[in-house]
Amino acid sequence: MKLKLHTIAGQPSWQLKTSVVEAAVTRLGGHLGPVRFRLGRRWIAPYDLAPWAGEPLPAGLPPLLRVMRGDFFCLPFGDNATPYRGEKYPPHGETANRPWRRVAAADGELRLTLDTAIRKGRVEKIIRLVPGHTAVYCRHIVSGMSGPMSFAHHAILKLPGAGAGRLSVSKFRYGRVLPQRFEDPAAGGYSILKAGAQFSALDHVPRADGQRADLSVYPAREGYEDLALVAAAADGQPFAWTALTVASGRYVWFALKDPRVLPATVLWMSNGGRHYAPWNGRHRHAIGLEEVCSYFHLGLAQSARRNDLNRAGIPTCARLDPRRPLTVNYIMAVAAIPRGFDMVKDLRPVSGGGVVKLTARSGATVSVPLDYGFLRG
Image 1 (cartoon, rainbow, N blue to C red):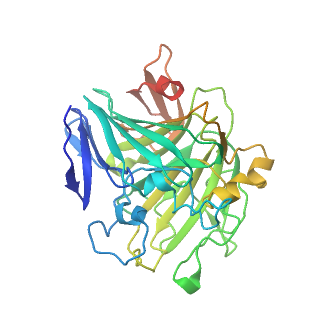
Image 2 (image 1 turned 135 degrees about the vertical axis):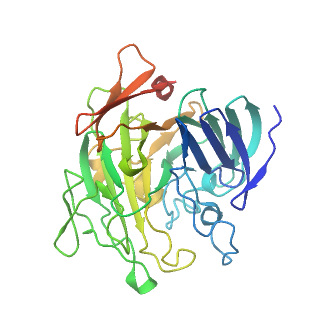
Image 3 (image 1 turned 120 degrees about the vertical axis):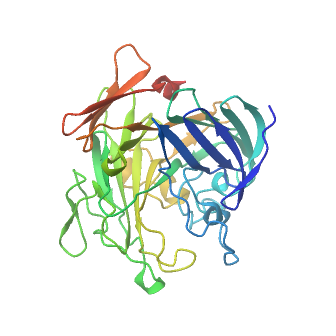
């Protein structure tokens, strides 16, 4: 099937469509976005697009920042400021910064490949749409590499205004704010959460000023950038989940993962706290809901060594074996919600398969057709 490139928000991109999903994938960095979902008679576009998309930017910025949109696969995940055994990676790795090559396209499916140069190997990207499903199914297969590696999906959502979203996650066993300063005021960056603070509930997280932050309500804390992590707990379900309910928009966005592969979620709250280029204080009301196998966002060197997460039994990297490819599966979906659906309290499969049920804290429910077995495929 011939699939032409179209320039979308400044980037040559491939497009996939069904009657209920329209998705673009950039050639540079393989970023998934923009994505639109049809809910009844209306379309929604929940993902973030960098406000500088298409602008001329200062020389020296990584391609990642020129493209930044939607969701992208990171290998290795993080800023990678410290080289790992001579391997110097760009922020979020080659997979988020280098051009991908299309190898196949069929109805509702796009296959791309990237031959990595820093650590020799290959990554295959498969983006799949299923007729009638308001979902995007993502699979990445990493082959030919050996040694430790961090990785992640880096979904970024954009919200319409202060307090519009209600964030919830499946049961977690560990929560912590980044254990070092996230932003430097001397460089024009500002954070408010207390570095290294541990928490057991999203709505009760220590701030640096002695107050408490409610991370379940977003956008909040205007003028700050913050980063925290939660690690999924085993609860007998076939997946772990992250959900963002937007009652004013009458929808919920949610993502499913296998917590054995992606054991933690990094929460990046970007609300105008960066005043250096290209951010210039204008990236606001955006939240990264990043499913990771990594030590926060600090890169491969910190993820591969002993740290407080892996000492607590939370993997921060995988040990790759060229004889056994690593497969990372991930599903992102949306659903229309009924009046009174405030925030997701529970998300689980319906008996018989092929459907998941979301239950709100208020008791309202919604059921969504979804092939959650894709996560174990």
